[in-house]
Length: 74
Image (tube, rainbow, N blue to C red; front, side):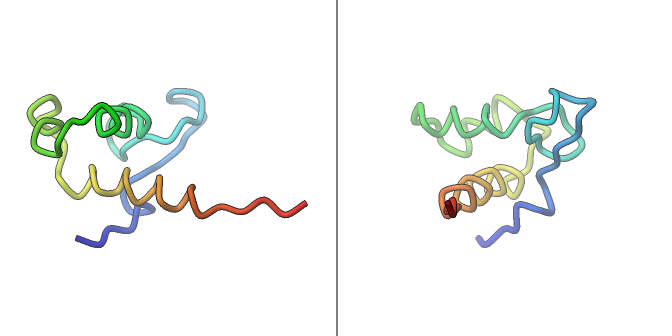
């Protein structure tokens, strides 16, 4: 399921000092990515955070993919 992370991920200085969050929540993207790194499935994450939608979780993965493609030009 293709998801554009920009529709679901925000960063505001007032909440978690600018760390990326899932829009309309206080759930940081790094938390969701950490669960994936620990081997959790999407279904397990939804059980832990029942207000999250699958698309929001996939947006975290799309965000990470986008960051992985970043190239620093020196």
